[in-house]
Length: 345
Image (cartoon, rainbow, N blue to C red; front, side):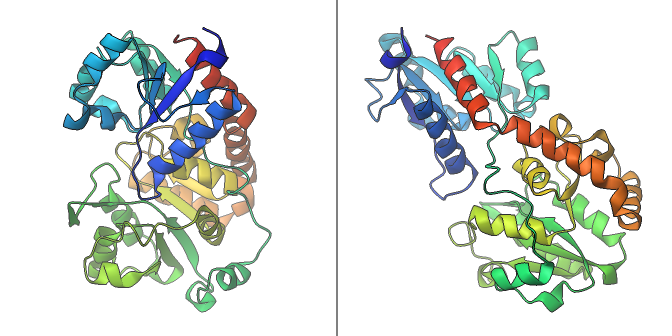
């Protein structure tokens, strides 16, 4: 089958303009750029590409296995988290899926060990949006209507991710491990640091900060958090705004136990924001080993070293940037998606 006879049906979305919707938009662009036809008719499709594998596991798509067999469709799925924590999900996918797209080297090795066809493609973060800006913190604050005096003479630690469970906003997402971030912040000199929070469903960590008397600033509509209302539809920020927030931050810290990404690794690398991360997801694929930590005391020493001599991290920051820039090469990604489709005819 030639590429001009390939018709692809894209499946999966979160409908709130968050991570999955952005993944779908990026993949759509790469496939269109490879001259494949994108169809809205699943019956006309030769391939079904699911950008969020959990979609296929719901009751709504329980017929997909029979549909695939009857109509001879090729099904490719994107693995969006660390599925090694959910072996029952992988078992449910085995007889349905022809190929898997995984974001990290760790998951690629895992799928190969399971004798499953896999391709490693990291999540896409646009280098034209996420980049270092030649603006002062005061200038950035004016751009996004924040009070500069809140950050003046402070070390700003960024955190822009969901850490509360949607069904119960008082509970943390275990994957994100926000309690570890709180533990770290408690051991830093409080008068010197401010935690900059953004994104929806930050209820848990904000309440922890208030309980522990940790300085924080939330960028967004705070009334939803104050009243424990779900802000998933109101506190999703534009990518341009998030880029400003990275440039306002001195340090970004990932404390996750389990990740497919996180995209914050790529975003921090592209904005040349120093980032320290647990050994999860694609972090070791992108970051200098110097920035991976396995316990709080090690991290605190790394932060102390960075603050004492930021210049000594210049090469490390450049290493991260070059790795991320190489991975986000759009022409390379377009060819990778083309290869996946044509190898699964």
